[in-house]
Every structure is written in structure tokens, then in C-alpha cells.
Length: 321
Image (cartoon, rainbow, N blue to C red):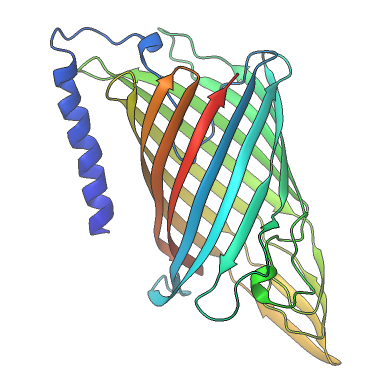
């Protein structure tokens, strides 16, 4: 928590130092503020018709502990999950953006063998519908409705080694409401704020043998991933036209995931219990132009229950054509 507080003070201090960038207290024009986007929260703005966005991410999820039923943190040996995901979006119309998000992973657990090879995770399809647009001088933010469908393309059961499990095995439908607004601070610099709300529901999963749900060899049965809720509040502060400071605060909760079946004719039952986590993701952006930029940051999860504590450094390049 002390590290997170220091990051908050660092962002605040940079915002105050930004006063010196505008000695005449002039108001920064939106065209003079270039953005990549915060590390986690997607944009509520749809792409113009015929334009495309490509944003590849590289990251390393370093799991360092586990939160028990009472929210107490227990340290564990560090696991690594190296991964990539790429937003590939296209403006079908000025108000409709469609695309897909492929994922790839390679796991290196603290104990046991690493993944036999890098592999594909679950594939996400996305459709975004613009409801309102931001207009300077009006209090209405940009709003959009987003539907995501996750396809179980990653391996999840009949695993020879646990680290080869790279997917969830479920069809997951997520409904989101994205919002985005621009604010001018007393020093005249622009602050871009986002608030994204998501509800996700998954299908049940048929399982055989060792799986990502902790089932052993010889298991036959099902798992039902619990419904999930996510709230992501993010802000970006335009220090200069090229440099931006960003911060996400993310709350995620999931209902219980029951696993039911048999092993060698004996009943097998397991429950994950309901869970939640709170993450903070400070980041720094550098933008070459209004259509190209890079962001580097780290997501820290150090608050939760029945969830994993982790530190995830990540880098992404944002390109709009």
C-alpha cells in the first residue's frame, strides 16, 4: 500500500508541476493533447468509418501471493505468465466499431514444468455502439455500449501439465458501458477521464482429466464459472502534448465457480468461493503524433479476497490508421 500511495503522490506532484508549462495560464486546446489511452480502460469513442486501430500489448503477470476468505494475504513463490494481446478494431460506421482481440501466453510456474510451448488463449470478439459523443462545452460525456463474446480457443482440460492450460473453456458474454469525458484543470491542462462498467456471464464447461479448474487426472464432470463484475475508473493528465501520465483503479468481483463430477467413481466437488480484487495501474505515455504512441506501466493487485496478488508490468503501442 505504501508503494501505491507514493505513486498517487507522484501523479499529483506531476500535475502541479504542469502549471509551469503554461506560464500565461492559457487553456490547452484538445488538438494539442495527444493520447495513447490508459493501461486498462478502453475508450468510449468509436473509430471514424473506414479507420482502424491496432494496439499490441506485452506483459508479465507475476503472481506473488494469495488472498484467503478473510482477505488476508499469504505470500507464495513467484509464478510468471508471459502474455500478449492485441486490439484489432475497425470503424464499420462512425458509430459502430467491430474487432477482435487475440491472446497468447507462456507460463513459468514457481513449481512444476513450464508450458510445453507458447499457445493461444481465448479469442474475444467485440462490437461497440456509440450512444453519445463528447462536445467541448457540453457536460455530456462520450458513451458507448460494448458487447464482447469470448470463444474458448485456449486449452483448458486434458492437460499433460498444468501450465499448458491457457483458456477458460467457456463461452463468455460481456456487456459493458464505457464513458469518457475531458476536463480542464486550474492550470489549463487537459485531464481525460474514463469510467467503464462490465458484467460478464459464462457458459458451463465440460471437463476431463487435469484442467485449469484444479481437477485431477481421471476427472469427469463440469465447471460453471461465476458471473463477473468490473469497474474501471481511469484518468490521463496531459503534461505536454507528447507526454501523459495515466492511472487506472480497477475493482473486479466474481461469483462462486462450482466444480462437480467424479474421479474413479467417487464424487468430486470443489468451490472457488466468491472473490474480489482491487488493482492500481499507473503508467506513462509518449505520443509521437495524434495517431501513434506508446505506454508503459504496471498493474498492482494487493487488495482482495479469494484472489491472487500480482504485479504486472506491461507495454503497448497504439496505432490508428
